[in-house]
Amino acid sequence: MFKVLAVAALLLAQAQPVSSPATVDELVAASVADFRAHQSPPPTDFRAVRVGSIANADGGRQLLLCGEARVTPETGTMWLPFATLQTGGYEQWLGGNATALCTQPGIEWDPAEDLAGTMKAEFAKRS
Image (cartoon, rainbow, N blue to C red; front, side):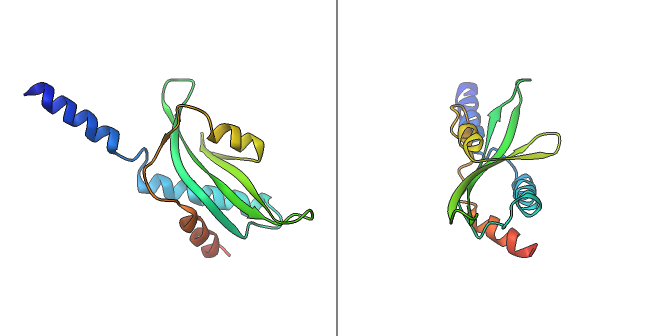
């Protein structure tokens, strides 16, 4: 009986999201704030946004938000990969660095739906 309960608890733990809704909201808000502060002109859309976690150097898990932002620099409209990491605060990576980070093996992705709509809503809220 103990083995059955232990296996059930393990399966339940594996099915849980990697982060809480409040933490996801904080990551989204930090990402939007960084885009507002540093991306000119600001993004006009978002796609393929998801949250996950990756092992860090001390053996813990570090949360990250990965996706793409539609930007329109002087060279024309493009989709810019981004990654927002929960560090001591938050940091945002763009372009190839974000792609490299977000495609690493070992990322545990939250099974939640695409958070692009959440990013858009947060961006609109802060307009």
